[in-house]
Image 1 (cartoon, rainbow, N blue to C red):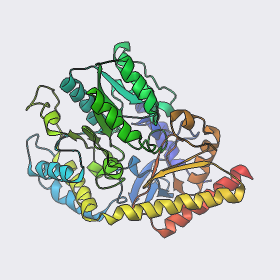
Image 2 (cartoon, rainbow, N blue to C red):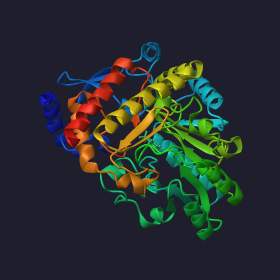
Image 3 (cartoon, rainbow, N blue to C red):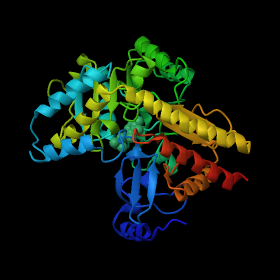
Image 4 (cartoon, rainbow, N blue to C red):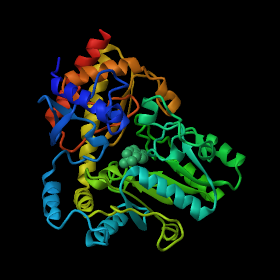
Amino acid sequence: MINKTSSNKLFAEALKFIPGGVNSPVRAFKAVGGDPIFIKSAKGAYVYDEDGNAYIELINSWGPMILGHANELVESVLSEALKNSTSFGAPSEIEVKMARLIIEMVPSIEKVRMVNSGTEATMSAIRLARGYTGKDKIIKFEGCYHGHGDSFLIAAGSGAVTMGTPDSPGVTAGTARDTLTAKYNDLSSVELMIKQNPGKIAAIIVEPVAGNMGCIPPGKGFLSGLRDLCDENGILLIFDEVMTGFRLSSGGAQQLFDVNADITTLGKIIGGGLPVGAYGGKKDIMEYVSPSGPVYQAGTLSGNPIAMSAGYSVLQFLEKNPSIYEELNTKTAAICNGIRRNMEELGLHFSINRVGSMFTLFFNENIVNNFEDAKKSDLKIFGKYFNLMLEEGIYLAPSQFEALFVSNAIGQEEINRIIESNAVALRKIFS
Ligand SMILES: *Cc1c(COP(=O)(O)O)cnc(C)c1O
């Protein structure tokens, strides 16, 4: 058994002062049994807890640490930036550089506004879509997570499903009424909703590759089908690329699948580990945002110079080293193939979904194409698997309904250890 003395002590203290002992619900190990480990530090492909245990990282701060932890490039940029104060609340050069770089990298973005989190980005994007179109309703997809804004806590994924509260108290009936939920990878469910609500829908918001119900790729024609439905019906298409942006390619999922959005939301990698989000899109839409337009949106710490410096250094690295995506792809494929071989040896047939460096092993023998499929996974087995992997020194997301993220700091040694640990865990559960 791993020693969890210090983590357990800290968690007992945390429970006295913080709701549930954590500052974001999925960090609690509620869905898998046991208490969370407290992280003291992390470097490269490894995190270290308060008891001195080392783990190979497959959470990577839920995506941002694509280059691995405590990256030297990011650290040196940050220490320089710190000398010039931590916040101005006034324009600075790094914001202009950041905006220009994002526009260069993400195909459909012509203007961009920085915010402080993915949640803020999606909330602002929806307000903008409503302001621009003069319509109230939005369509989202079951199991997609777009942060904790009221409009999105309807059939939401990630922590909302893990915690078993898909519809949160505190979200008013009025707000819920304006959010329609369609089925992921099912264009006919979207068509039906558009037909039933003629002229009322401002936007369709979608994770172009779903990551918050576990990793689910878009089926052939799904994204381009959404694009067509939006064009035919005067609806804006919002790609929530908070997770997929700069992860699946330097231009995100929209570049990978060659479908453009009207508005794109960004987060996670864009801050290089600091709290940053952004939303951007076509010029005429973005010009609707204040102060150039009537849709209000603001932020005391938006475009914060420290956060911009970290994010800029990561994005610039990714833009200059596009081969990193091929490397990540190869590494993640090697992990998934190893897991498949392990399963074959034991006569197991669980689904693995993967797009680039995002993947999920579903304890489900059928294809997982939407939220309904994902929910049929065996959560009890997942809980056992999670805890056995932790014992083996592999840090997985503590929920079946999350994607795992591979960082470029992971090398052959870590790949081998992940595959070996998976074999040990599967053997312990199934033989
Ligand atoms: C993480 C995530 C969000 C929310 O971002 P926060 O920074 O946690 O507020 C929104 N959308 C998607 C697709 C995400 O993965």
